[in-house]
Length: 218
Image 1 (cartoon, rainbow, N blue to C red):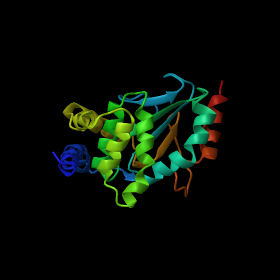
Image 2: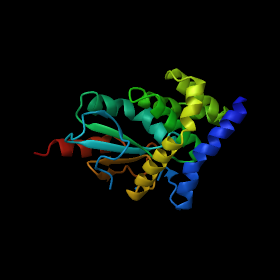
Image 3: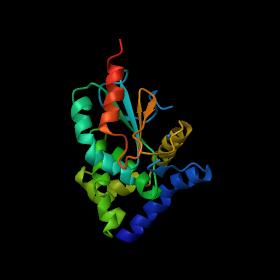
């Protein structure tokens, strides 16, 4: 099977989730809103479940604003709150166009395993400029997946797994039911924190203000 045929097959299967959401009239957009309790499929870093402060980010690997936040804010946020276990950081998946690429990207990240999930997600986000330069997204997904230790065959099996697709659809529907309408969206202990006018999600200053206020509570 050629690379083009493999990617076409991936696109058809991954698009099942996007089509289901579109039928609901609820496919979220990049850049657009409760979300506090633990959810099925949560991927997290930092403090364990039950931490005093939980920061939830709804994101998509195909969202430019999400990629900008990862580049501009994530390093400082991680150093200030995640590496020292001050907060539990949770990433929840909400695919944005091209949704077939986003769904496949998240599925590959999960197949890479919990220890490499964030590595794959960040790797795909950091490669978005390749697509603007004409690189086939399929090539990016396979390259990042290979870098996380997955073979091409493992990746193909991963993105064609019907149970994994159903789980991806359920996570997306849960995000929509929580009222999230765009990515990235940030919630600190269930309360959304927004930086008006930002092109890279919630600012470090606004997140710190909300987090520190929660940490200071008795």
